[in-house]
Structures are given as C-alpha cells and as structure tokens.
Image 1: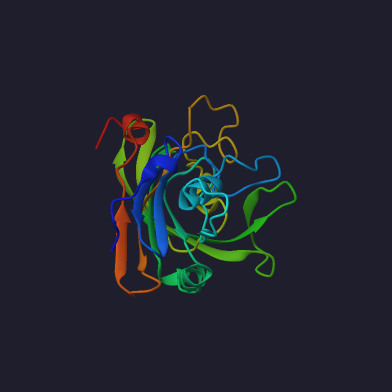
Image 2 (image 1 turned 90 degrees about the vertical axis):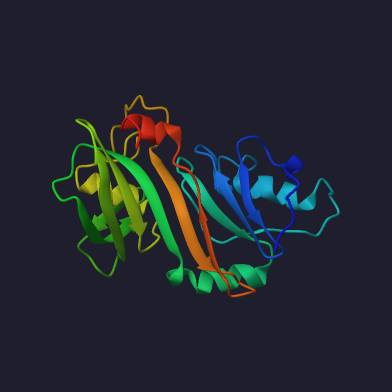
Length: 230
C-alpha cells in the first residue's frame, strides 16, 4: 500500500512507521508535543509532519490532521490523517481502536491485573483527578497486568479502554503507584530523565480499505533498564 517513505524532511528522533495516501503512523519521542500549545508553537509532531508532507514546498496544499494525542512526555505510536475524511472516519470509530501501553510504576502491585474505573475531571490548574460527581467527570477505564517486578518498580502492560487526558498517569497515581518520572502526578522532584510510559501498539480499521491495521514498536531501553530487562 505504501512505497518506501522519503524521510529527508523529518526531524531527528521522529520515526515514520507507516505511510499511505490516507494515514501516517509515527513513533513519537518523549519530550515532543503532539500539537501546539500557548507556550510552544513550532516544535511539535504536527508541525514536523506538516513540513514532511509539503516536502519543502511552501505552495504545497498537502496537509495532515490530528486524530488523537499523546502527552509531551509519553513516547510511542501516534496516528495522523492526510485528509479530513480519513480523520473523521478514524475519530468516529475510535472506540473500536485498541491501544496498548507499557509503563514502569513505583512499588509492587498487590493485585497483579485489574481494571481501574473512575470519573475523571480536569481542574483549573489543568490537572486531572477522579471525582464522585458523575455529572462533572467522564467515565474512564484503564486495564492493566503486571509483567515483571523488582524491589522498587513494576513493569506494567496497559489496555487503554478509554482515552482521557493523562488517564493512565492519574489512575496509577491514585492507586499509589505513580509512573516513574511523572513529575505532575508523582514525585515533583523526581530525578528520572523521562516519564516511563510508552504507547506500545495500536490496531484500527483503515479509513479507506477497511483493512485491520496493526502496528507495534519496541519497548524503549530506558523502561526495560529500570526493571533489569525483560
């Protein structure tokens, strides 16, 4: 479906996993925003991929469209659409999209597999938390299984059953097992170089062919290094 991509216009550290006429799938590095914020307009995956599809031509009408987002500090698989039609199809069928993450959390979990459910709401400080008020929050589900444990950490595979902002980070922190390196919901003074959360795999129906697409990436060495490998 796709020819070998010309990655000359991609910035260092951003890997193009797949491309065809309808979609782009990338492996986003930690530290890169998906889209612009008030404080950062240019150094984003969206800006980089816009430059890429325009291939250096200011006059090019080629565009990309945001389908979903990853937090700045989260690495891994991210889908962009190359048309509004493709974007709308992917978003309208997003509930059927399956997303697996891998994380390293502090401590050992008493229950080695479970589903965390709560209503999540964002406060005025842009921090998400669970609420008992079902009229304010959005029902959110995070399923997990512990893959490996050390004295200090747990390597956890996560099925993201709903996709709320900061969902995995909030749910794990509220279980007293914050993700390693999470300065927002865990230890604000953490000396870890990055958040130990990675979007590992994703499967979805292609917006044009209806073919089931599946992509996976390797687990970053930083994460496996925390638990002594797999």
